[in-house]
Structures are given as structure tokens and as C-alpha cells.
Length: 284
Length: 127
Image (cartoon, rainbow over all chains, first blue to last red; front, top):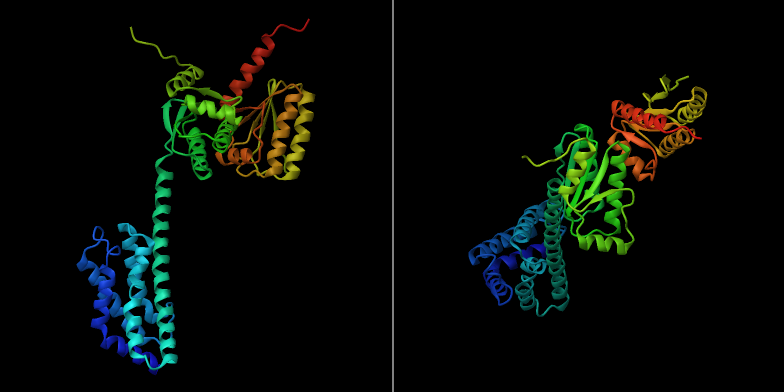
């Protein structure tokens, strides 16, 4: 307790020097991202972090980031990592915000305890552990916020990309765009089957013009969807198979046997209409 | 003892599953339906499963079997009203009912049956 206090008071006494040195580190060539953050903003962040760090060090005996006293530091670093993840900093650059503090502090400790090697080592170790855990915390938060962004985008994509449209009475179509994975196929399948019931459709068109590649897995997914639709009493047509895709599919040994396929959506619609007793004809 | 009714409708048999199927019930239906097809000399069977909300692997397989058995007994089989969730489950279980006709509801199913049997009776009698 006594020792901890003395370190805090030492850091407090020398804080101007430390902050100056730290600033030098932060603004040194290659580290400072002038394109992403203004010098004033960075200085403010440093100042805030330093203040809350000193406060937490003074309050808590143990250095355990999950303790109540470290809460302000944690929330500050969380904010910082999140904003940096959004701005486009790399993980290293984000962690360096904390790690660059090492040099000035260690310098100070070394100067102070020059004549007491045991003490010197102990203090260095303590501070090192502290700064390391803070740095790791920033990285972790950074990654977590990045993951959050990815997850949100995935959800948005899932919602965006599966509209089922009604072409005519008894005919529905689903234009697929982008790569098909298991999760998306599931959503597409469910939406399509629901719509077949709602529109009491007998023909369902799956248009894969927007699907960049069809491998065995995607084909498997498509076949499943077609089988499920057939079980409900609707005929499925797969349209929009591009020449390149037709070639790869045959090379892979995937052939949509027993499934009606058409080259274009127009052909599929024409075929579907004829199935339910309509004919498209040109006006006189 | 609960039972699934099998109704005779002209040349067709109509099976409407209104309760949740369990293993014994499915087996009994299989037994009774095949017997009735032979007895009534039915030309078509319509199985309405619109009230069926849950299928497990056994029920799914029994359904596929019943449909296949009816076909072997020379009765055209139409399964109607399958729920989306049931359809997905059946496909995941690998039971895509090959050779069995399907329709969205009883009305469409009857249309299909009528047209099929019509075609059959129009065909010239074997020499």
C-alpha cells in the first residue's frame, strides 16, 4: 500500500516530464496517423487516460482491471478502441497508444531507483504487467468492436438479399444475389416456402443470375430448396445459369436432374405462365 | 383408441391427418390404408397433411413409405398441404418423396387426381 502510494506520488510529481516524453513517442514518425486523428484530439485522449490511470492507481491496491476502481480506465479505453476501430486504425496502432507510455515511465523508474536494484526490478515488473494488461485490453476491445461490425453487416446482408416477388397469380420468383451459404439458403428456403403458401403458387422461379459461383455445396443447397418446394406442391424452375457456370457445374459433376432449368429469367417466366395456362403474345 | 379416418370418395381414398402423428399411429395408418386400397380397388389416394406440424425421421419415412406403397398398389398418390417447416425437415432427412405427386391444397390435389385417372381411363384397354 505504502509502496503503491509512493509510485503514484512519484508519477504525479513527474507527470509533466512523462507526458512530454509520451507525446514525443506518440507523435514520432511512423506512429502518428495525421490522416485519422488531429493532434489536439490525441493530446486530449492522452491527458484523460493519464488522469484516470493515476486515479485508479491511487485508489486500488491490487492491479486487477476487473476491480471497480479501474472502471473509468476501462470505459475510457473501450471508447478509444471503438472509435479507433471505426476510424480505420490498425490493432497495433491502437495498442501502441498504451504501450508507448512504457518508455517514459520506465526511464523515470530507472532514474529514481538506480541504487536499489531489487526495488527497481519490482517496480518495473509491476508497471510492465499493468501496461501490458491495459494494452491487451485495448486490442481485445478493438477486435470485439470489429467483430460487431462484421456481425451487423452479415445480418443486414441476410435481410437485404432474399426478397420473394410475385410474378403473376400462382407464380413467385426469388432473385438470388451473392454467394449462397448454409445460413442464407435456409433463409431463402423459408421465405420462398412461406410465400408459396401465401400466394398459393404452383410455380416458383429461382433466379441465380446474381450468384457469382456455383460449387457442389451451392448446388446441393439449391437442390434442397427445389425438393422442399416440390414437396409442398410447387414446381421449381432454376433460371439465369450463365454459360461459365453451366460449364463448371458439369465439370464438377453437378447436374440438376429432374429440375427444370432455363437460361434466362424471361424464359422461366414464359414457361411458368404456360404451366398455369397463360400465354404471352404480342399485341396487334 | 385414436384413429386416422380413411374416407372413400368415388374412385379415390381421402386421408386427412388431423392429429399429431406418433409411431404406432403411423404404422396403423400404413396397414389400414394398404388394406383399403386393395379392398375398394381405389385408383387414387389423397393424403392431406396440412395439420401436421412436426415430423421426425420415423414419421417422415413412414409417410414416404405409405406414398410409395399406394403407388405400387396402382393408386396414384398425391400428398397435399405440406407445411414449409415439414418440407424443410423432410428434405434435410433426405426424404424428397421421389415419384409422389404433391399439391398445395386438397382442391388442387383432387384436380390432379381427377386428371390422372381421366388419362388412365382414356387409354386404350390392353389387348
